[in-house]
Length: 349
Image (cartoon, rainbow, N blue to C red):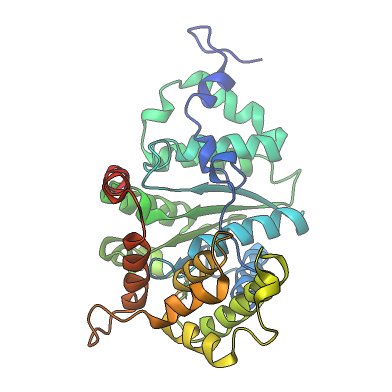
């Protein structure tokens, strides 16, 4: 076992810099958003097929999944991580899920150490290389992101190429949730430099909003030439939202405490269509509607009627979240201790 000059175990030193809450299966993220059955099928298949390409046929090494808040990016990233880990043993999957409200994962500081820990867990043969690197350079976690990626992720994996044919899939969700914008840019640059001009068995899947600095960096030639882009704001989302709503309404009619009071054809097809249209291709509106309607303390049909009767704050608004704003406004109007709720929200915002 390698030991730091200070006598500290390098594995313990690594663990001190790991953000366990950033794992795809972290208890702190339970129950994480994931794609509902039979939704986002085409996008998941595209990402899966791209991930499973063999190195000699690969033309792009970075995939950027982008879309507005509430478009379902995190659900897709969670689902693809679970899918690859469960069904495809030919790839190794490591992940990091950023969150602006969690101090342990709203910065890039623990990113590489968290990925390295997962790499050791899935490919134990990398352990000696990674831990000996830490033992020789205990300050490695203070060095540049690209340097850390090279020493703790790329080189350990490349050293095993003769003994393993597994490719490594690095999933990074919510890059825009990293609070430091310069760090967002540095991450993209580092990944681009690592992948550019090299036939390596490592790919990166990054999900984020289309923030100006992120989009600008992905558009640079150094990155764009090896980049695959998947935008989520397309009309196909409407079909998935309709399937999601139909499944959730069927579930409410079977399991809700007041299900026996619901008529067989509730809700009508036109009502579902109305909700789909108000969603503006954003899953967040549909999922919020379902959470509101499925509350066990109220009659689902009455809750749905409240939503259908809501009016826009600004009838002329073309903002895609206008109906969501109206829904949240109503929800807040029903809160008994609004001041306390606002204090809590202010803390997180």
